[in-house]
Length: 212
Image (cartoon, rainbow, N blue to C red):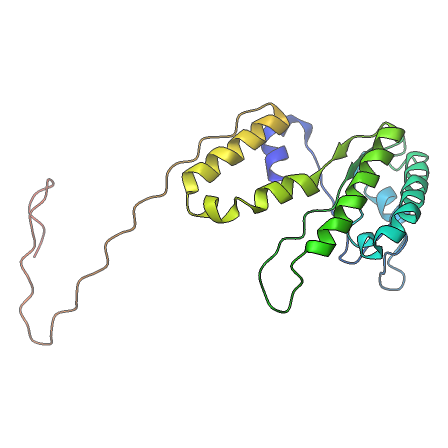
């Protein structure tokens, strides 16, 4: 959001995140009287909807892919038939789920099975988007490729900044702003003088002698 606002200041964009953890195309648990997805999209007068589904559905495995396709097509048909902004149908963008990173923790899966399923659901979203003529963002491949470089880049801040700038320019066509290098840390203070000890003489600098 910050990147888009920076590159497109004249558009006066307003973002609303209407997704909750655990949401799927057909299951979006909320408190009583919270309102339906359509209620909220009408309330915020949505012009563009970025739909991120497939991660929670992917736990259904290969057997659930066909049902997911049907649900996604129904979601697209319903969404494009609405006029949430009161004037026109929304622009709809479909995003894939992200890669399941292996955090190498004993109480978490390593992601082998999960990523196999996520890849299947990413392919399904890509095909449905192409059939419907909708933009598709492949977050699975992007995050999978980035996961292998995280440790390397975290040790090289300058390279990370270059990669971020190149990615921003590729997405928006506008170069990212230059980032000043981090300031050097101030040296730690010296040890406190012992009680009753005379203070150490101050050194003179370019601005003249320091007060004693």
